[in-house]
Image (cartoon, rainbow, N blue to C red):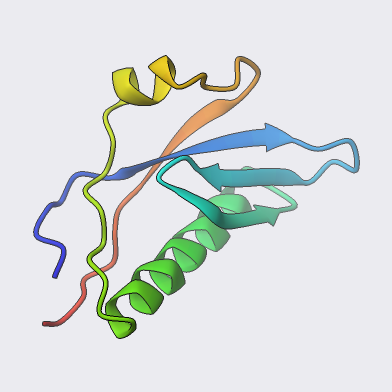
Length: 92
């Protein structure tokens, strides 16, 4: 069970086709997109929830969200906006 209310950091980048692409540094395979920023955030929340549910169902822990200074030291994309996405509530 994830016991933190701290949000996960997501990066939002505008794609050439005008879509907003969202990625999570803490979950490299978790990505989503949307035609607007609002849609991109809604889709990112859904993608993060699915990722957390998959981990839980596999018996793996959901990692604690990284801090921005940790992500920046790993090379955050300079052209991305930062979006904060709350983790879903997962029953034990």
